[in-house]
Length: 264
Ligand SMILES: [Zn+2]
Image 1 (spheres, protein in one colour):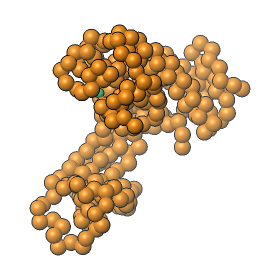
Image 2 (cartoon, rainbow, N blue to C red):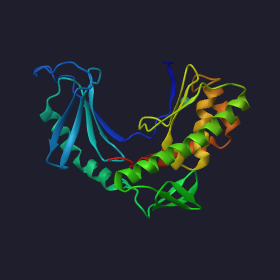
Image 3 (tube, helix red, strand yellow):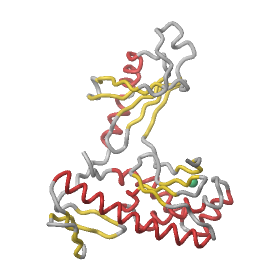
């Protein structure tokens, strides 16, 4: 396993944090000091549940709302009591409500759904087998099986485009990459390991092709520059002159790529 030299993070969920008072916790019952022990907290308002993640290193409460599912989570230092966390969440209910109202709707693909795939609009239809006829994409099965077949098709499309772009950019800078892996990861669009292995999110097939190209140019540039310094960005620019536009697109619209729900 090589060290990760890059993790292109999608625009993260909106967060809000508050520094805890220095005295907080001193007279409180102790919680075990373990990282990331997950608890859940039932919420009266907004109704639902919040995920609590205990982190021994955190010094403050941090509230996050996942931009695709609307899941609320709070990172908390080990000793903060659940009541205090609940009060913290309640204190931000106005903010939470405003964020929730802006969450994009999830798209559950079904026959008749329209998707953009590698920049081309396709209309999904039920068929006996996987078949693309012009802008019509026929997929077998129903429900989860239909969506699974679609996910497979999106992955294959992503692999073709990302392999082509990675090979092309690698050739341009005279370096060889160590192979491509595709994942459906929420934490990053792409990464390059110190051994030159490239990883991409296959949801990039749902983005404009130039954005997909930019992510490939970005990761391939790490084969020469294992950092995000000025020389790195110069190299990215030489491969992808309008990279700022595409990076901006990912920041502003990246979350939309996670709206499409392929599995339960
Ligand atoms: Zn990077």
